[in-house]
Image 1 (cartoon, rainbow, N blue to C red):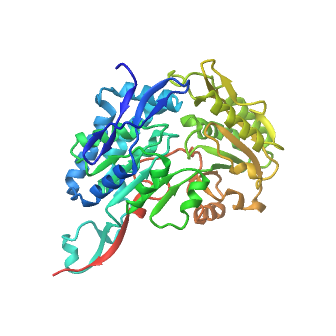
Image 2: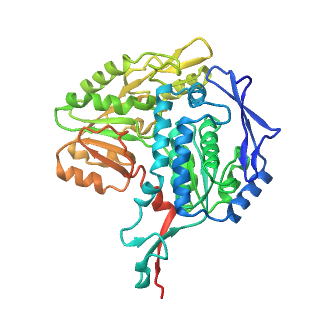
Image 3: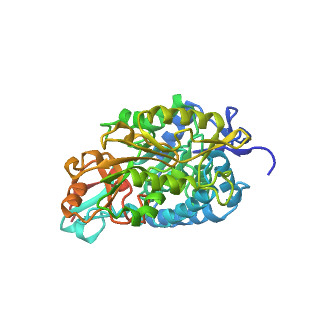
Length: 456
């Protein structure tokens, strides 16, 4: 393919190439693609078309989502092979290409299990359809809260596009506003969904300016939005918007056996280039945290600095100016802590306008130090002391907590704490996941509700 990749909007009447196009550049500033941006009127008409559209029977939906996952992961789509797609995402997002390849397979798997994963949230006392025989004597019916679902995607990791497939499998019509950092993944996935049988009025891609983004949410019944704390706070209390913010995942090491768990700690910090919400942000140590921090720093310092398309790359790459800004922010927040790694900076200039962001390890004196809540988009960890007297207070507000402990009373407290999303007891990395288990609760809990039904 010559020239920039053309990423058209995918509206309710098919692909649309607008005059207003955004240049999508790679980490060196080299143009890679042109993304068509659509105006407010286009968005309003597309959202109205989704609302008017007829539903697709469940068996056809499930088969089409599964087929789309295979097409996404294997086929030539709009002139791009899967390897072309993976290279583009790696170069533009700065993610190691091994991460992009792994996510491609994860999206294939998520598509194959989308309906089953969604139904994991169904109450055991409810049925899926009003024609179920049990409705003649009265039962609960599991049904959608609406018809149109909007997605404001993030660009830190392509894996965010695995989740909304569950909404499509449940019968929602879906509108996706892509991130400008990764428009490739949703464009490829929606094209595959349409090729598998979903109509143009069932799933749309609406790249648009920030000033129009709210219209996509406003035109939907429910929405999922990815972002930072400001985004989470903006939608707090809004029952129609599910805000996915920072994970602030943590590890708790109790007793004196931390050395046998070091590989799991390192993997939790550095897997997926440290860019995911399930990567460990803070490690709490019962006893002296110093040897733990030192050992983590020694392991992470050995990771090489490589360009993202290198098969051996493990660290994220950013435009040099972006990397410098992230470094400045980090060092400002780290004032007053002990630097084991990254205290002199985390930017490794590659000489082509891009830079590897190297790992950072800082030690704090107090489990309640504000730094332990600072989440960065690369392997960065805060190591803190912890004691039983402090209890679970420092461990709150966590997406995933891995606790290396056999203290059943402590486990009870962690499991019962509402602000801890997932609890992994023992030698399990914070990134662990398999189909059928919740990530941040089941999406189906948000998309669906139960109502009573009885019929003659």
